[in-house]
Length: 99
Image (cartoon, rainbow, N blue to C red; front, side, top):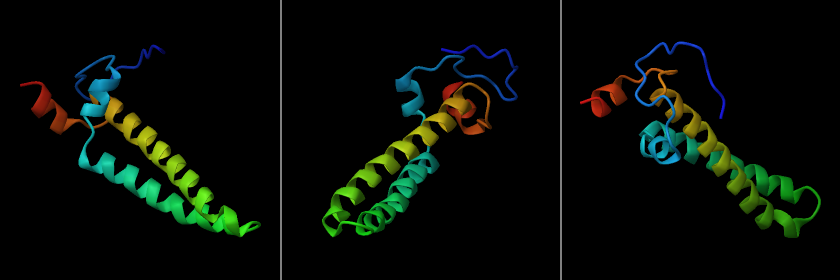
């Protein structure tokens, strides 16, 4: 795990949040990013599978959907962790978790 020596711009809730803390802190916007990344990658996989072998349409579509879901999860995880560590704006988290 890396160590950052930068001073956070916002209040730090957890300096080193665990996986559970970060995923529990997902906002509706984070889930929206995951859904959009998944939905955007599905047609891409369908048409990429159509290029050479028509029988690869559905497997390619499924695989690209899974890759899009993972990419969306990674973006959401990074944003949620950044808010908990005080790297991103976290007004809602400060109000909710610092009671």
